[in-house]
Length: 338
Image (cartoon, rainbow, N blue to C red; front, side):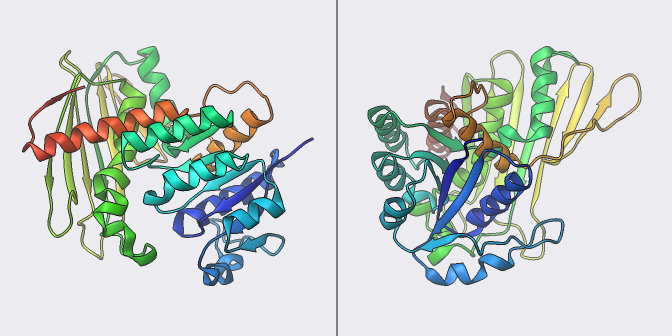
């Protein structure tokens, strides 16, 4: 069985999460092999072999090749796929470069920091005839897929309302503190809130109007409250925050009220509260969303028919919606037509 050869570009926190995913795929004998990692900071590699998995195992990275120059890595390794896990402000430049060097690309979210940048990335993929996929990993999460199926089939009736929240301390751990530089990260709305905004589009489709208010102390767009109006009485609200207390753990939850039941999801598990019958938690496959998105792209590269890959055009629509939310926040919460 032919395996897709992959290289990882960027070895910060999300890069390490992707390394764990490749390790899981190797244990499943999936058709992909990670062969090399590139990071401009060579000190990152000394920590590679000690990354802990949830099961307590460490990832054996001794077989991998390490580079500090991306073009050298591509020239020597000749990968099929480059997995970009760089800071957000580098996504556009790195994606276009890797596509033009002849590689398929999986780029972490956000696709880019503007719709214009997304357009240039899409044009580069079309020009090179290479596949570009954006890592909106929640779309591969078993919990969210369960809820989407129930919503699409109206198993419990139509959606009445929903509330999403994603709360975190201020992320000071990024390289050169790039997260808290609004020009390099886009702030909480683009880096954290994007997960729920994308999931709202995935689960419910395109809203007719959106509005948002933001608190900007001490960083721009640090606390976000957004509303999504579908014009049919369905109202969706989402909260994102980078201002939680330093001692508080990360928290993510969504609550979806349908006509005959309510879902409560913590990102990994779903509890179903039916209006009639017993409360239950459906059995979900224990799969890593990141591993699944990598596998999806690799299967596509191998010529298999894949329906779940996230196209760059689809991912760019989430960026466009986030821009409308920012426009609303700049207008003190004035609704913006989608």
